[in-house]
Image 1: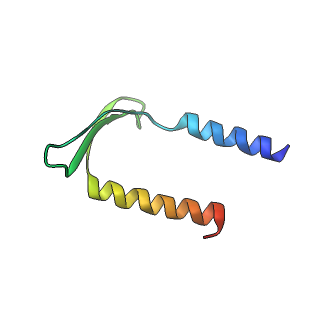
Image 2: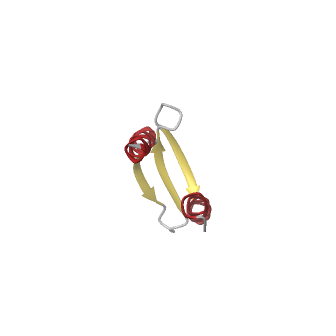
Length: 70
């Protein structure tokens, strides 16, 4: 039963994630622009791709530490 509750909680988290729209990479390949409803409104964000990759790696490491004890 607890695994069912855990799955429901994970599904709720997934549904609550903000949506990204119309992602576009800059011609030189260094930036990505997208609309994100993080604040509840669609707003334009522009990020350096290298910084996004670093952020994803850090989040993945944190997730693995929490889930797998790595």
